[in-house]
Image (cartoon, rainbow, N blue to C red; front, side, top):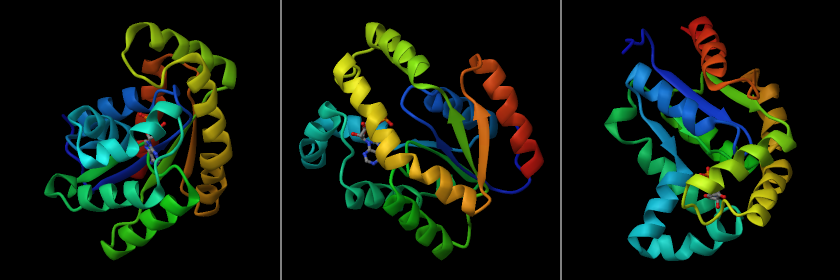
Length: 196
Ligand code: AMP
């Protein structure tokens, strides 16, 4: 594990299947900071059958985004946990401009603006191939072909505007997400090295 000289607050941005989860887990292990994936948190709630889970299940099954307010509340609570003091990696949040604005407001309150937003770029066909393959091995109810295509459209429609949002803040860093995972990892490590 590598000790960070200053806290590292990152967002991993990218379409479903771009490798955010893989890279977030690796960074979490490398730097000893939590990877926070709203998709994982929501799926756990659905599986546990909590009121929140019951509320969001239909969104997840259809590949639609859960309501902004709900995911913003989850992140607000999660970022107040002490394990985030040395940094965090957000995976799958924010996904709308409203979520990004709420995150900025929250981090301004905490006086710890984001260090960078890493955008994993992958073309649509590669995403369809990867997610189609993932569907053969996992149990996710939203990795069905029709839902996969819809989730990519939802990304293009509701999340892609964040690319410009963060570019305007000079926070955006582009990564070629079509490369093998270890090359993506090397590119990310290079970028993080330049932030520290
Ligand atoms: P993921 O595991 O990131 O692909 O997310 C799976 C599903 O969880 C998405 O298709 C949405 O239904 C829901 N979800 C995850 N993160 C968010 C978010 N930030 N805003 C709204 N819905 C989300």
